[in-house]
Length: 210
Image 1 (tube, rainbow, N blue to C red):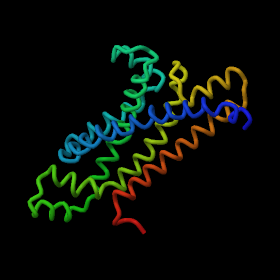
Image 2: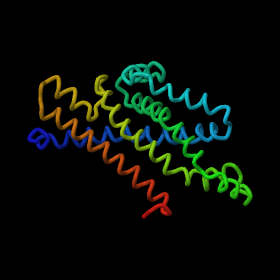
Image 3: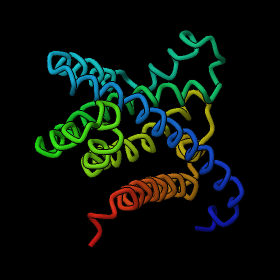
Image 4: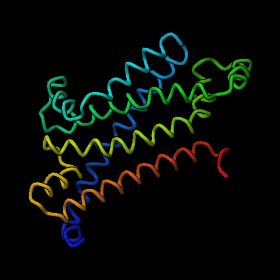
């Protein structure tokens, strides 16, 4: 506790960086996963290939992916964009199946009724299918959010500053207070991400509110 109180500025700065490195990929990954999931839902023959193919991306070791990104993107090893892109890949890997499951959860009669009312495929997606799929998608998004907060910490091993830096520095210099602060801060940030996803899902689906 004493160490944390003495380094509040550092903790706040690292927390903000961690939030950006985990949060931006979450939004980008969702934007990529929605069209991929929709195509897989619309064309059943593509579903297995799309779901399995994107899911395999999650098996790539995070440290290896962080190191590989500069070679692919032509960036510097310490450039935060490497982490953002890598985390976006992981987010897509987790969310494509979730989007497909969410769209599949939409009752067929509701979809048919929207079609009968003259809704085109894209209008049905945005005004009917996605709103009804939000609870399922939000459940997957919660997993991806917590996962992102956890995996981003590993980027400290290649020198990208965020809360994981407290873990590596605290361990290397045997500073228990710093190490404990890093663990608690990461846990709290993951909880905040989870609460934001839950709260946003409730705002977008007022008909489900108690």
